[in-house]
Structures are given as C-alpha cells and as structure tokens.
Image (cartoon, rainbow, N blue to C red; front, side):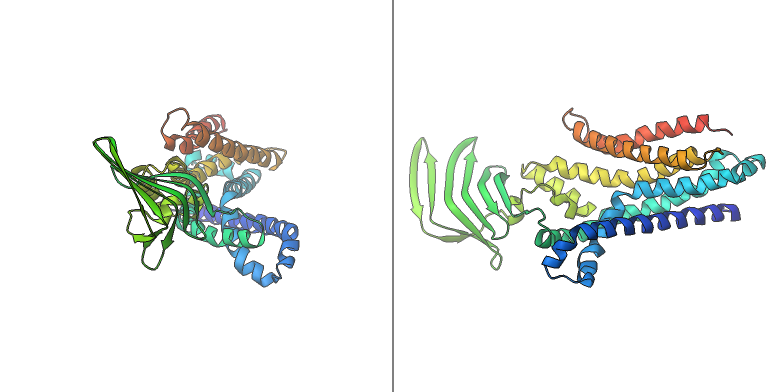
Length: 359
C-alpha cells in the first residue's frame, strides 16, 4: 500500500512530467509556427485555423516522439532534488532499500506508459490522418496517391497485376488477371484501364482482351466495357510506404494478415510498426528507472551532469531502435526483436547502474 511519502514522490514525478511536456512542446510548436508562418499566410489561414486544424493533431504526434526525453528530464529533476536535499539518504538510513524508494517512480512510469500506449495505439493514428491531410494541402506534404508495380493474390489460383494505381481517381492502369489450374495458365484477362465504382462496388473494365488456354490451344477474344465483380478492392492497390502511421494497433494486425494472405509485400513494415508501438510504453518504465538510478546520488555538480547523461541515453535509445528495426529483418531474425532490443539492452544497463549506486 502506498504511503504518504510514496504519494509525495509520485505527485512530484507526474507534475514534473506534464510541466516538462507542456514547456518543451510549446517551445517546439512556437519555433515550428515561425518556420511555417509564410505557408500559413499564403494559404490565407488564421491563427485559430492553424491551431484547430493542424496543431491540435500535431501536438500528440510531437509529444509521443519526444516522450522518452520528457520522462528522463522529469525523473532526473525529481530524483536529483531528493538526492541534493539528502532525502534519499534519510530514507536509506530509515531502513528502506533503493528498490522500495523507486516504487513511486515505477508506478509513475506505468501510468505514463499506459497513457502513451493508448495514444500510440488509437489516438495518434487517427490524429495523423488530419495532420497529414493538412500538410499535404498546405505544406507540400507527401502525396500518397500513386502506387506502382503491384502484385495481388486474388485467391489461391488467381493473380492480379497493376502497373500503376491512382488512389485519388480509383483508376488502375495496365491491369492483368491470370488464372491457373494445376500450375498451368488457363485464362488471362488484360486491359489498359479499370475504374472503381464506389456506388456499385464493382470495377469498370474498359475494352479488354481475354485469352484462354486449353490443351495448348490459345483463344483470344476482345470485349467492350463491362462492370464486373472481382475479389479486389482499392485498398489492395494502395501499396504506399508510410500509411501504417494511420492505423490503430488492431488495424495494423489485420493489415499484416491481409498482406500476407494476398502476397502484397511490405507486410514487414506493418508488423515492425505494431511491435514498436507495443514495446514503446515498456521503454518508458525502463527509462524512468534508469533516470532515477542516474540522478539518485548526491553530487557537487547538481543535476547538470545527470541531464547530459539523460540526453545521451535517450539518443542512444533512438539509435538502437532504428538499427534494430532496420537490421533484424535482413538477418532473418524475428521482427519483434528489433523493437524490443533497446528495452533488453537498457534493462541490462539498469542492472549495472543499480549495482554501482551507493546504498
């Protein structure tokens, strides 16, 4: 059961976290607005328009990216103040061990990690849709309208190919549909263009050619336009890098399965994104413990040295995360390992720090 001392330290940690988050986020947003103000003015947007249409969705995205830094700074600040006021020494002298002193910090890390888990899992993906729509419209953001050279499994015996697909118009160019039987091609349909009709949920085939193969004999027929049901949907052709940032955790899991089933490729990107999001909240707890162990010793130099260490460790975490997610797939290792590798390494670092901290 938490005691008054635990509640006191927990309040300090939570207050410091939200204060640091508010302060740094505000500073970054002011700098960001100054850099983009010309674009906003050229688009005729007022400050209120920018705040409600852009920064309302940009702030959660930004806060999530630098949340490890928030955690480090707030943990180091609170733990260093406790150490500099000899409060930690007093707690140790009263019979409390270092792990018991860390309980409110760990609990604070769990609370913050849970908040971040909910954010990265469901809130931020939906906010990213609005944010990127705004950036594409007013800030020359990325255009996700075109996909090239897309192969899709329609079913176990039928395969589709599209040379170019335009998401904005729902049009696929140089479309081919091939059907196999006993590993032999028996039917091939090809057309220069197909269009998706969202009202009827059918594809409009422009003049197309159909080849059938029977006992080595090829038959070629040409047909006019036709509306037809094919087990394909526009989402199957949206072979776009980066669209996983729009998806919730549940949607990511379904997308990985869909891409595997249809041999769409790029499913690794979605699975990596899923594991990164699940590992990220645990990193908050690990980094909280690390920040405490770095700062919970009384020094003559104050908190400056601890802050430098904190910034360095946060940077190392990001480097390890990028290296891990980029390397494990190429080495044939499980994709989850890349996302969790920084956590495993930092747990080991925490053990070393704990063993070397004065008790």
